Image 1 (cartoon, one colour):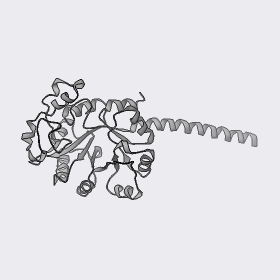
Image 2 (cartoon, rainbow, N blue to C red):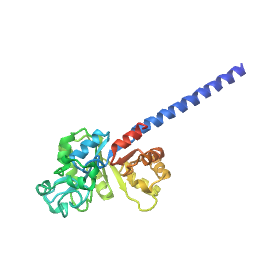
Image 3 (cartoon, rainbow, N blue to C red):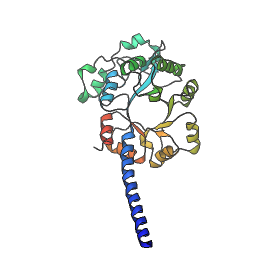
Image 4 (tube, rainbow, N blue to C red):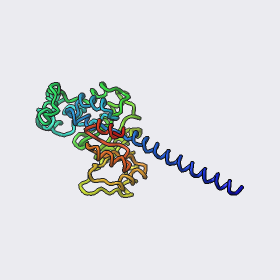
Length: 285
């Protein structure tokens, strides 16, 4: 009887072990699927960044989020643009804040891409316009996933309130909205204005990244995640963030090998200019 009991217990232990192994494999595959694929400035490896064309391409390439950097015009309109100046991504020059929306709408926001990346040039990129945040919302609707950054908020007083006003005006689903910034002051202001909006603290490191207990606790008071530059983090950094309940979405990762490494380390999302490549990695290709 004892021998039978021992045999039974052994068999049970073995089956549980095998079940555990199977479930961990399933978990790993599921975790792979859950990695957020953030189309950085749209599918900006293939089309002019922060244009409706780039955002649409990001969606087609299985990007989970439309990522929008915000600047504000002279007449207080929020537009999608990374830089504070017009020079790099349009045929204009000078500061965004010195031009009205009407003036910025006259600019060509696509031809620069054709000149810089002739191998990916498309005739219909010429003459693309700088979109407003309102136009992005009108194009993709209230239930799309938006990942919006308040850029240089110190240059644009009231940017946070303006963003919230437009989010509310268009009935944007706040469960699918993430707001990020390098400025903790801007995120704290957002949190004060509307605590229901989920926030991500962007971080930039110039030396190997460290995350202290104090930083974790401070960030967790207002944000649900962090976005560090991918080239300065390691497995320990990622694990510390995740084990402390923080989402971690490194930027900007454009090589499959690097994507796989970060996923293996435990990141919960990745910013990429090539969302199709991250989709392939997630599918095991």
